Length: 107
Image (cartoon, rainbow, N blue to C red):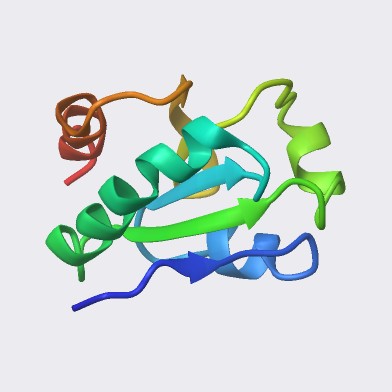
């Protein structure tokens, strides 16, 4: 079972932009209720897409540079990267089916 990774401003380029496979990044904060609500779904996706998609989270309070670079103004925001490029983006607490559909586009 794959764990949800933790990304930071320092390792974002290496861990996300230069990753050898698609990466789903959940931009979140500990005080965000909707972020907590989708956390179990993010964990399920990490397990279900292990080996196909890297799934991780970035705390926007601890890492302000990267969310600013991608224009994140609301959380949770989930961005799907492939080959260093943004492929898709969803803002808000959405259902698993919507996230699965997004991931299936790159698998």
